[in-house]
Length: 185
Image (tube, one colour):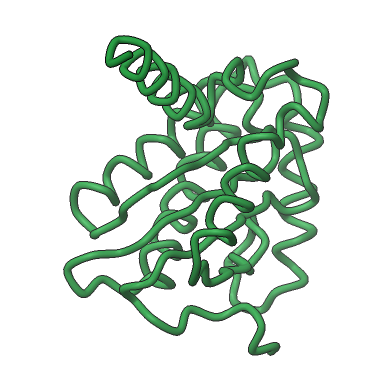
């Protein structure tokens, strides 16, 4: 395994990416998005996850994050992926209205057969591709990259219009800062 993508310092800030196996567009449905977002919230409350910025695309997510209270980054992300994989595959199986069931389940089963560590299905690709953000320039570049992801994909014109991202939070803070400057003048 390459040493390029590893968590070296549990206290550091990282840019991470997780992708659905086969790049399947699963997160186009609220139920699956909510499972993942609920897992993020749980890990923020219980497993030391600090999310600095994020974006959820139809088949992957990017996040700038750090970890507190001695929690190991790789383990927290593994927990997110394990929990969401089980819950989402269960939902695909049990939701009668899921029109893509006959496509998604064989796809995840095919990917599962390629990895001996899987029981049956593989929902997530195994890598998180952590990139250490050890300076402000790298941090800002990655934050811009993740927020602009929906714009580059053609889903929205402005990053702050994408509902599943922290871009709007940064936009609102920037607007408040501009307003504060105008008031002070």
